[in-house]
Picture 1 (cartoon, rainbow, N blue to C red):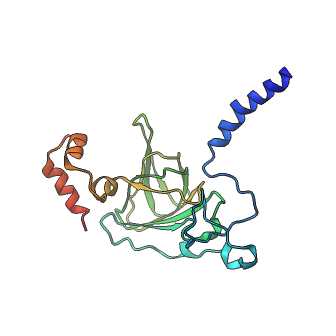
Picture 2: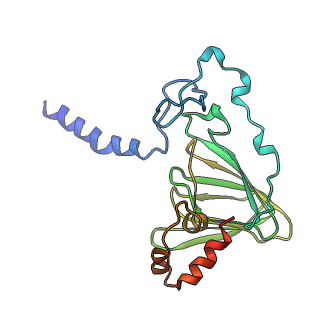
Picture 3: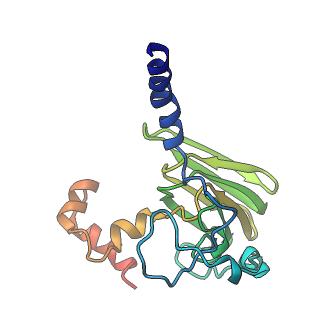
Length: 218
């Protein structure tokens, strides 16, 4: 009896914590094409389309083939290939994005709370970096064909430092990684974060905070 109890304790202490670190739970079926307009409650995924209604088109997505519109304040565009755009990814624990950058364009500091990100520079020259929880910056300038990785939840950014356009394809170990863009989260939330919170956090006058908020109010 004692050896069996010891084995059970080892499983609980070692195996279960390792499983809990997975970004998305493993699926228990071949596929589960998501029904996005279903209003029923589900956990870590959408309800499955009946297999009899699934077609080949459910497993193919051409959304990343088109260049995004970078005509905005940051000069970049993200085209998402997550479960909301590609329901065939439902429960599979992966997704991909295309990110286009105008010359000088910036994918501003942001985080993905539910996934680690890896990416490949397809075109151009990018300054890529992420920050640890100890406020250490790891960064490098990358060119076409080079790859980067950002651990789950850490703040990161990419900036086009080349003369022409740039583009990356990124992958995530979640079908819906989520994104928290720090500038818009802090200065364009609805309802807004009170000025006295932001002035205290950034150690600046209210006029500075109001000026930044004005830039993101449109």
